[in-house]
Image 1 (cartoon, helix red, strand yellow):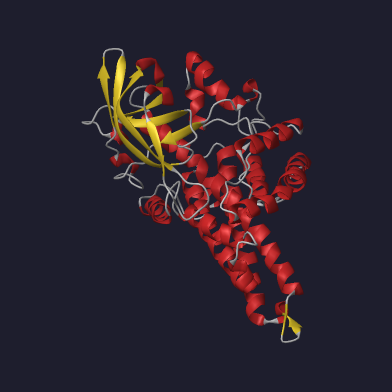
Image 2: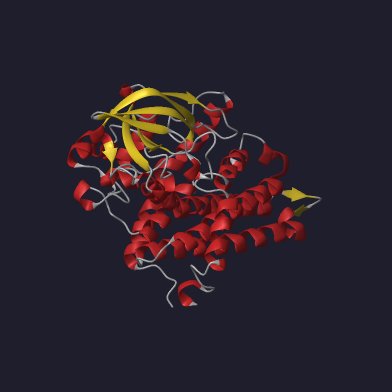
Length: 390
């Protein structure tokens, strides 16, 4: 069993790491300075400039098919790169991406929505969560009613990532209440902001914030259905599923960077005449963090591997999401403790991470939902102990 990277995987990973180190990390102090001054962080134009620089390195569209100018990287490679992105708290991501379900678009939709999104000329958001339907996504009540060649959309979506900046939304709406969302009663719509929906910013404990989207008799042409009528819930689960290995991949990068800071601090900070790293309490926090970090790394890579192997990734991805999200919260908490009062200030990024990673246990499936999926798979015999090696 080979746990090593191929020469190609290592070269791509190292190139991504080099770009993050040389081009993105130098912006961190300016980002912290602006946030301490209660100013916006990096402007979209600044982040866009970084993406175009990365494009010169060949990094454009990590998961985007080559026919659209992307790299079409396998899931394991995408996971490795998301870990590199996680090493910096600058809200950067490589350009050339589009929501994975947007590739179900018709040719007309590709021209209007997909290609401009890949090019970075348009921003999208994915809208399924509602005030009364979060973890229970099948409980959505947002309605779409047929009216001739159009559909009339009414309702509210909430906690929508990127909803304030989006030019259009991929909206999951109930089109057949009798069948229910899970059983073919929900449909995905591509809804341009110019069609009449509005967004409101939701303040959170993290930087930035999601949005609530409001639809009041928004008229959408039938041609704007993504996929087929009744396919909405299936597409939604496909969209959510990808996040269950990319989010913890990002968490590994954060945990590695934070733990490196803790080790450096423990080797330089002195109390009572000795380095704090000589204290057993500090040593144990570092040891526990490294052990959990390594365990998370392999759970996450295995989840990505199941995707590349063509296996059902849901069980492995739920374990990766559950453990990875918990791991990064515990590691950042220990790193703050090791840094003492300075870790609690905004001079360092630790308190920023502390607020940021708390969300990882909530979005794209809460801890509780991951536990439900994992236990249900075992209790009902959908999977076996030991996974593909069992």
